[in-house]
Length: 178
Image (cartoon, rainbow, N blue to C red; front, top):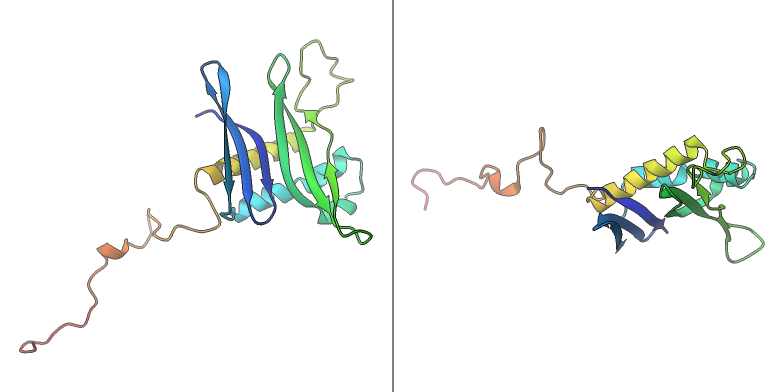
């Protein structure tokens, strides 16, 4: 099924995912706001955006090393329905009780229209686009049930049989016992 990400955020407590699926020549939107913790690979993909924030915002990479990346907002526009992205992160500062909120400029993955001059149109670097797509894949895995909590009763090769299929290990009565 074709899906596209509209928004993803994670504050350490809840995951919010907004996505769309094509329907009758248009896009139909859905939202999940869940307290289920994501898999570690989800958080890894989210925090991998730190270096890309540094590049986009022209900040020292060292400054961005402790950013708390909270999410991405995606939009689609132009003749080719081009993906564009804004990344949001928090930076805790000693001088305030609230964090600094960093939002990258909204950048498209490629020029919106064929008539745009490629050299003058700022776009996402290929590595940043790949990191965004990896995060989107993690968001869709989350929607498909891949969470921090592993399956209680996994299936497949090497998995333990379900509890009702295990042999009876209750104490056995000896002959002659009632």
